[in-house]
Amino acid sequence: MWRDLFSFHILGQSLAVDLGTSNTLICRKQHGIVLNVPTVMALRVSDGSVVGVGESARMMLGKTPRSIRAVRPLRDGVIADYETTRKLVTHFLELVQPYRSLIGPKLVLGVPTAATRVEQRALIDIGEDVGARAVHLVEEPVAAVIGAELPISEPTGHMIVDIGGGTSEAAVTSLNGVVVNRSIRVAGDEMDRAIVQYMREEYNLHIGEQMAEGIKKKIGCALAPDEQVTMKVRGRDLNDGFPHEVEISSGELSTVLSSVLTTILDMIEATLEVCPPALAGDIMEHGIYLAGGGASVKRFNEFVSARVKLPVHVVPDPLLAVVRGLGRLLVSPDLLAQVEITPDLK
Image 1 (cartoon, helix red, strand yellow):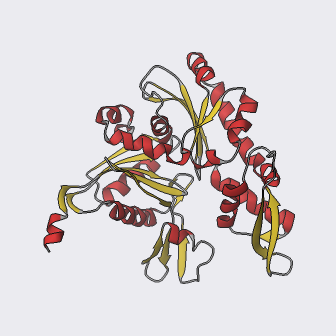
Image 2 (cartoon, rainbow, N blue to C red):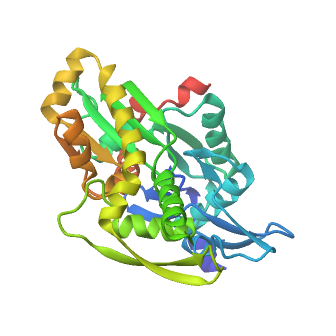
Protein backbone atom coordinates (compact mmCIF):
# COMPACT_ATOMS: atom_id res chain seq x y z
CA MET A 1 0.00 0.00 0.00
CA TRP A 2 2.79 2.44 0.94
CA ARG A 3 4.61 1.69 -2.31
CA ASP A 4 1.42 2.52 -4.26
CA LEU A 5 1.08 5.76 -2.29
CA PHE A 6 4.63 6.88 -3.04
CA SER A 7 4.22 6.03 -6.76
CA PHE A 8 1.20 8.33 -7.03
CA HIS A 9 1.64 11.83 -8.50
CA ILE A 10 -0.76 14.72 -9.02
CA LEU A 11 0.18 15.34 -12.69
CA GLY A 12 0.78 12.74 -15.35
CA GLN A 13 3.82 12.75 -17.63
CA SER A 14 4.33 15.11 -20.55
CA LEU A 15 4.58 12.79 -23.55
CA ALA A 16 5.27 13.20 -27.27
CA VAL A 17 3.63 10.54 -29.43
CA ASP A 18 4.37 9.66 -33.05
CA LEU A 19 1.43 7.35 -33.70
CA GLY A 20 2.37 5.87 -37.05
CA THR A 21 0.86 3.34 -39.40
CA SER A 22 3.75 0.93 -38.85
CA ASN A 23 5.40 2.04 -35.61
CA THR A 24 4.51 4.06 -32.54
CA LEU A 25 7.22 6.04 -30.79
CA ILE A 26 6.85 7.88 -27.49
CA CYS A 27 9.20 10.43 -25.94
CA ARG A 28 8.89 11.33 -22.26
CA LYS A 29 9.89 14.77 -21.05
CA GLN A 30 13.46 14.74 -19.69
CA HIS A 31 13.77 10.99 -20.42
CA GLY A 32 13.99 10.82 -24.21
CA ILE A 33 12.46 8.06 -26.33
CA VAL A 34 10.94 5.42 -24.06
CA LEU A 35 8.91 3.38 -26.57
CA ASN A 36 9.42 2.24 -30.16
CA VAL A 37 7.13 -0.64 -31.11
CA PRO A 38 4.96 -1.78 -34.04
CA THR A 39 1.46 -0.29 -34.13
CA VAL A 40 -0.24 -3.67 -33.92
CA MET A 41 -2.66 -5.25 -31.45
CA ALA A 42 -3.93 -8.84 -31.27
CA LEU A 43 -7.45 -9.31 -29.90
CA ARG A 44 -9.56 -12.30 -28.98
CA VAL A 45 -12.58 -12.35 -31.29
CA SER A 46 -15.03 -13.65 -28.67
CA ASP A 47 -14.68 -10.83 -26.14
CA GLY A 48 -12.23 -8.30 -27.56
CA SER A 49 -9.66 -9.00 -24.85
CA VAL A 50 -6.03 -8.16 -25.62
CA VAL A 51 -3.78 -11.09 -26.56
CA GLY A 52 -0.68 -9.21 -27.69
CA VAL A 53 0.58 -5.68 -28.33
CA GLY A 54 3.48 -4.28 -30.33
CA GLU A 55 6.18 -6.71 -31.42
CA SER A 56 4.40 -9.77 -30.01
CA ALA A 57 1.26 -8.86 -31.98
CA ARG A 58 3.28 -8.12 -35.14
CA MET A 59 4.71 -11.62 -35.01
CA MET A 60 1.13 -12.93 -35.11
CA LEU A 61 0.22 -11.18 -38.39
CA GLY A 62 -0.89 -13.81 -40.90
CA LYS A 63 -0.50 -16.60 -38.32
CA THR A 64 -3.56 -16.31 -36.09
CA PRO A 65 -6.36 -18.88 -35.67
CA ARG A 66 -9.97 -17.81 -36.20
CA SER A 67 -10.31 -17.00 -32.51
CA ILE A 68 -7.69 -14.22 -32.67
CA ARG A 69 -7.27 -11.27 -35.00
CA ALA A 70 -4.11 -9.20 -35.30
CA VAL A 71 -4.98 -5.62 -36.23
CA ARG A 72 -3.07 -2.60 -37.53
CA PRO A 73 -5.59 0.07 -36.48
CA LEU A 74 -4.05 2.96 -38.45
CA ARG A 75 -4.19 3.20 -42.21
CA ASP A 76 -2.43 5.81 -44.34
CA GLY A 77 -1.25 7.59 -41.22
CA VAL A 78 -4.70 8.12 -39.69
CA ILE A 79 -7.05 6.18 -37.44
CA ALA A 80 -9.03 3.47 -39.25
CA ASP A 81 -10.20 1.48 -36.20
CA TYR A 82 -11.03 3.89 -33.39
CA GLU A 83 -11.73 1.41 -30.58
CA THR A 84 -8.60 -0.66 -31.20
CA THR A 85 -6.50 2.52 -31.43
CA ARG A 86 -7.90 3.66 -28.09
CA LYS A 87 -6.97 0.34 -26.48
CA LEU A 88 -3.52 0.47 -28.06
CA VAL A 89 -2.76 4.01 -26.91
CA THR A 90 -4.05 3.21 -23.41
CA HIS A 91 -1.69 0.23 -23.22
CA PHE A 92 1.29 2.24 -24.51
CA LEU A 93 0.70 5.05 -22.00
CA GLU A 94 0.54 2.54 -19.16
CA LEU A 95 3.90 1.14 -20.26
CA VAL A 96 5.71 4.49 -20.30
CA GLN A 97 4.20 6.10 -17.20
CA PRO A 98 5.91 4.66 -14.11
CA TYR A 99 3.28 5.88 -11.68
CA ARG A 100 -0.41 6.59 -11.33
CA SER A 101 -1.61 10.18 -11.43
CA LEU A 102 -4.66 12.16 -10.39
CA ILE A 103 -4.55 14.30 -13.55
CA GLY A 104 -3.72 12.70 -16.91
CA PRO A 105 -0.70 13.30 -19.13
CA LYS A 106 -0.07 16.18 -21.50
CA LEU A 107 0.20 14.78 -25.04
CA VAL A 108 1.88 16.29 -28.10
CA LEU A 109 0.80 14.25 -31.13
CA GLY A 110 2.13 14.27 -34.68
CA VAL A 111 -0.43 14.45 -37.47
CA PRO A 112 -0.06 14.21 -41.28
CA THR A 113 -0.49 17.53 -43.09
CA ALA A 114 -3.12 15.92 -45.31
CA ALA A 115 -5.26 14.74 -42.38
CA THR A 116 -8.81 16.06 -42.54
CA ARG A 117 -10.46 17.92 -39.67
CA VAL A 118 -12.41 14.76 -38.87
CA GLU A 119 -9.17 12.73 -38.72
CA GLN A 120 -7.52 15.40 -36.57
CA ARG A 121 -10.57 15.44 -34.30
CA ALA A 122 -10.32 11.65 -33.91
CA LEU A 123 -6.77 12.03 -32.57
CA ILE A 124 -7.91 14.61 -30.03
CA ASP A 125 -10.80 12.34 -28.99
CA ILE A 126 -8.35 9.47 -28.48
CA GLY A 127 -6.25 11.68 -26.22
CA GLU A 128 -9.27 12.78 -24.22
CA ASP A 129 -10.57 9.20 -23.94
CA VAL A 130 -7.28 8.00 -22.43
CA GLY A 131 -7.44 10.77 -19.83
CA ALA A 132 -5.01 13.36 -21.19
CA ARG A 133 -5.26 16.75 -19.51
CA ALA A 134 -4.19 18.48 -22.74
CA VAL A 135 -3.74 17.40 -26.36
CA HIS A 136 -1.63 19.35 -28.87
CA LEU A 137 -1.40 18.49 -32.57
CA VAL A 138 1.70 19.29 -34.63
CA GLU A 139 2.17 18.61 -38.33
CA GLU A 140 4.68 15.80 -38.80
CA PRO A 141 6.92 17.61 -41.34
CA VAL A 142 7.32 20.48 -38.87
CA ALA A 143 8.19 18.01 -36.11
CA ALA A 144 10.68 16.30 -38.44
CA VAL A 145 12.44 19.61 -39.19
CA ILE A 146 12.73 20.30 -35.46
CA GLY A 147 13.91 16.73 -34.84
CA ALA A 148 16.58 17.12 -37.53
CA GLU A 149 17.78 20.25 -35.68
CA LEU A 150 17.06 22.55 -38.60
CA PRO A 151 16.08 26.17 -37.81
CA ILE A 152 12.28 26.13 -38.00
CA SER A 153 11.69 29.70 -36.73
CA GLU A 154 13.93 31.55 -39.17
CA PRO A 155 12.78 33.03 -42.52
CA THR A 156 14.66 30.25 -44.27
CA GLY A 157 13.14 27.49 -46.36
CA HIS A 158 13.85 23.85 -45.59
CA MET A 159 12.39 20.96 -47.54
CA ILE A 160 11.70 17.77 -45.64
CA VAL A 161 10.34 14.52 -47.09
CA ASP A 162 8.83 12.20 -44.48
CA ILE A 163 8.29 8.65 -45.76
CA GLY A 164 6.29 6.66 -43.24
CA GLY A 165 4.41 3.40 -43.40
CA GLY A 166 1.16 4.65 -44.91
CA THR A 167 1.94 8.12 -46.26
CA SER A 168 4.75 10.12 -47.79
CA GLU A 169 4.83 13.87 -47.33
CA ALA A 170 7.00 16.58 -48.81
CA ALA A 171 6.88 20.00 -47.21
CA VAL A 172 8.73 23.29 -47.35
CA THR A 173 8.82 24.98 -43.96
CA SER A 174 9.68 28.52 -42.86
CA LEU A 175 8.83 30.71 -39.87
CA ASN A 176 7.35 27.88 -37.76
CA GLY A 177 4.99 26.53 -40.37
CA VAL A 178 4.41 24.68 -43.62
CA VAL A 179 4.48 26.96 -46.68
CA VAL A 180 3.72 24.35 -49.35
CA ASN A 181 3.30 20.60 -49.15
CA ARG A 182 2.19 17.54 -51.02
CA SER A 183 1.15 14.19 -49.59
CA ILE A 184 0.41 10.79 -51.10
CA ARG A 185 -0.75 7.55 -49.56
CA VAL A 186 2.18 5.64 -51.02
CA ALA A 187 5.01 4.76 -48.65
CA GLY A 188 6.65 1.84 -46.87
CA ASP A 189 3.57 -0.40 -46.88
CA GLU A 190 3.27 0.01 -50.64
CA MET A 191 6.90 -1.10 -51.01
CA ASP A 192 6.07 -4.24 -49.01
CA ARG A 193 3.07 -4.97 -51.24
CA ALA A 194 5.22 -4.53 -54.35
CA ILE A 195 7.63 -7.16 -53.01
CA VAL A 196 4.76 -9.57 -52.25
CA GLN A 197 3.42 -9.15 -55.79
CA TYR A 198 6.88 -9.62 -57.35
CA MET A 199 7.50 -12.86 -55.45
CA ARG A 200 4.12 -14.15 -56.60
CA GLU A 201 4.60 -13.24 -60.25
CA GLU A 202 8.31 -14.04 -60.63
CA TYR A 203 8.72 -17.06 -58.35
CA ASN A 204 5.15 -18.32 -57.83
CA LEU A 205 5.86 -17.87 -54.14
CA HIS A 206 3.32 -16.50 -51.69
CA ILE A 207 4.86 -14.54 -48.80
CA GLY A 208 3.32 -12.33 -46.13
CA GLU A 209 3.87 -8.61 -45.73
CA GLN A 210 5.93 -9.30 -42.62
CA MET A 211 8.42 -11.28 -44.70
CA ALA A 212 8.32 -8.58 -47.40
CA GLU A 213 9.19 -5.92 -44.81
CA GLY A 214 12.17 -8.00 -43.70
CA ILE A 215 13.38 -8.27 -47.31
CA LYS A 216 13.05 -4.51 -47.77
CA LYS A 217 15.02 -3.74 -44.64
CA LYS A 218 17.79 -6.25 -45.36
CA ILE A 219 18.48 -5.88 -49.08
CA GLY A 220 16.10 -3.16 -50.33
CA CYS A 221 17.78 -0.43 -52.40
CA ALA A 222 16.75 2.34 -54.76
CA LEU A 223 19.63 1.91 -57.19
CA ALA A 224 21.32 -1.31 -58.25
CA PRO A 225 24.24 -1.83 -55.86
CA ASP A 226 27.82 -2.18 -57.01
CA GLU A 227 28.06 -5.37 -55.00
CA GLN A 228 25.08 -7.73 -55.03
CA VAL A 229 23.68 -8.99 -51.73
CA THR A 230 21.39 -12.03 -51.68
CA MET A 231 18.76 -13.29 -49.27
CA LYS A 232 16.89 -16.58 -48.94
CA VAL A 233 13.12 -16.17 -48.88
CA ARG A 234 10.66 -18.78 -47.64
CA GLY A 235 7.00 -18.98 -48.50
CA ARG A 236 4.29 -21.18 -49.97
CA ASP A 237 4.70 -22.47 -53.52
CA LEU A 238 1.59 -21.49 -55.49
CA ASN A 239 1.95 -24.53 -57.78
CA ASP A 240 1.86 -27.34 -55.24
CA GLY A 241 1.01 -25.49 -52.01
CA PHE A 242 4.14 -26.74 -50.23
CA PRO A 243 6.70 -24.60 -48.35
CA HIS A 244 9.45 -23.47 -50.69
CA GLU A 245 12.64 -21.38 -50.56
CA VAL A 246 14.21 -19.14 -53.20
CA GLU A 247 17.13 -16.73 -53.27
CA ILE A 248 16.76 -13.15 -54.43
CA SER A 249 19.28 -10.34 -54.90
CA SER A 250 19.47 -6.68 -54.00
CA GLY A 251 19.60 -5.88 -57.73
CA GLU A 252 16.13 -7.39 -58.14
CA LEU A 253 14.85 -5.28 -55.26
CA SER A 254 15.97 -2.04 -56.93
CA THR A 255 13.75 -2.94 -59.90
CA VAL A 256 10.85 -4.04 -57.70
CA LEU A 257 10.85 -0.82 -55.65
CA SER A 258 11.44 1.55 -58.56
CA SER A 259 7.76 2.16 -59.37
CA VAL A 260 6.90 3.01 -55.76
CA LEU A 261 9.97 5.20 -55.28
CA THR A 262 9.29 6.98 -58.58
CA THR A 263 5.79 7.84 -57.36
CA ILE A 264 7.31 9.39 -54.23
CA LEU A 265 9.82 11.21 -56.39
CA ASP A 266 6.99 12.64 -58.53
CA MET A 267 5.46 14.05 -55.34
CA ILE A 268 8.79 15.65 -54.41
CA GLU A 269 9.02 17.30 -57.83
CA ALA A 270 5.41 18.51 -57.59
CA THR A 271 6.27 20.20 -54.28
CA LEU A 272 9.33 21.88 -55.76
CA GLU A 273 7.25 23.18 -58.67
CA VAL A 274 4.95 25.17 -56.35
CA CYS A 275 7.67 26.34 -53.98
CA PRO A 276 7.90 30.17 -53.78
CA PRO A 277 11.01 31.47 -55.58
CA ALA A 278 12.41 33.08 -52.43
CA LEU A 279 12.42 29.71 -50.66
CA ALA A 280 13.58 27.78 -53.73
CA GLY A 281 16.97 29.50 -53.41
CA ASP A 282 17.27 28.24 -49.82
CA ILE A 283 16.51 24.69 -50.94
CA MET A 284 19.13 24.94 -53.67
CA GLU A 285 21.63 25.95 -51.01
CA HIS A 286 20.68 23.48 -48.28
CA GLY A 287 19.21 20.61 -50.29
CA ILE A 288 16.39 18.20 -49.41
CA TYR A 289 16.18 16.21 -46.17
CA LEU A 290 14.71 12.69 -45.98
CA ALA A 291 13.08 11.40 -42.80
CA GLY A 292 10.84 8.51 -41.77
CA GLY A 293 11.42 4.77 -41.93
CA GLY A 294 11.19 4.73 -45.73
CA ALA A 295 14.21 7.02 -45.95
CA SER A 296 16.32 4.09 -44.77
CA VAL A 297 16.03 2.35 -48.15
CA LYS A 298 19.62 2.19 -49.34
CA ARG A 299 20.70 4.82 -51.90
CA PHE A 300 17.29 6.49 -51.98
CA ASN A 301 18.95 9.87 -51.46
CA GLU A 302 21.09 9.24 -54.55
CA PHE A 303 17.98 8.17 -56.48
CA VAL A 304 16.26 11.48 -55.66
CA SER A 305 19.33 13.62 -56.19
CA ALA A 306 19.97 12.19 -59.66
CA ARG A 307 16.57 13.44 -60.84
CA VAL A 308 16.07 16.76 -59.04
CA LYS A 309 19.73 17.81 -59.36
CA LEU A 310 19.90 18.93 -55.73
CA PRO A 311 21.79 17.66 -52.68
CA VAL A 312 19.69 15.14 -50.76
CA HIS A 313 20.49 14.24 -47.16
CA VAL A 314 19.13 11.48 -44.93
CA VAL A 315 18.64 12.92 -41.43
CA PRO A 316 20.30 11.02 -38.56
CA ASP A 317 18.10 8.13 -37.38
CA PRO A 318 15.32 9.04 -39.85
CA LEU A 319 12.67 6.90 -38.11
CA LEU A 320 13.14 8.97 -34.95
CA ALA A 321 13.04 12.45 -36.51
CA VAL A 322 9.35 13.17 -35.89
CA VAL A 323 9.22 11.92 -32.29
CA ARG A 324 12.44 13.75 -31.45
CA GLY A 325 10.94 16.97 -32.77
CA LEU A 326 7.76 16.42 -30.81
CA GLY A 327 9.87 15.67 -27.74
CA ARG A 328 11.73 18.97 -28.06
CA LEU A 329 8.39 20.76 -28.02
CA LEU A 330 7.71 19.31 -24.57
CA VAL A 331 10.46 21.52 -23.18
CA SER A 332 9.76 24.49 -25.48
CA PRO A 333 6.20 25.64 -24.69
CA ASP A 334 6.64 28.92 -26.56
CA LEU A 335 7.65 27.11 -29.76
CA LEU A 336 4.83 24.58 -29.27
CA ALA A 337 2.35 27.45 -29.11
CA GLN A 338 3.66 28.75 -32.45
CA VAL A 339 3.72 25.48 -34.38
CA GLU A 340 0.70 23.56 -33.07
CA ILE A 341 -2.40 23.39 -35.27
CA THR A 342 -4.84 22.38 -32.53
CA PRO A 343 -6.50 25.84 -32.20
CA ASP A 344 -7.71 25.51 -35.81
CA LEU A 345 -10.02 22.69 -34.67
CA LYS A 346 -11.77 24.64 -31.95
